[in-house]
Image (cartoon, rainbow, N blue to C red; front, side):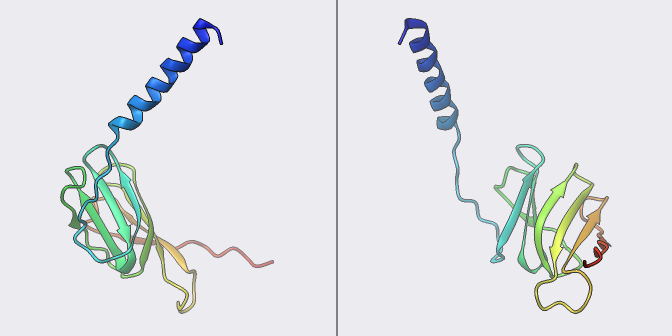
Length: 127
């Protein structure tokens, strides 16, 4: 291996080691016994976590503290996506013992989770 190739390899390994060494994962208390299925952070401080029994949690300090956001239903929240601090969607699952309709639906907020509205998805025709 030539001197230039060896230098590039050492530089690449050093960069990779430096990147992974900087990441530190720590367990954070959520304040809930719900199974959490999804998490999203808008930045280093603002984040959301969602899970069973209509659980939606929010943090404004990088996960050090979590506050529950009221959701009008107790179905399992499978995924969470916020565009910004006000506009967001939850993918909810009625479960296998649902009565009619689709198993999944969306909840939408435009005020940071103060109010939610259901967005039903049309069923595709069976073939």
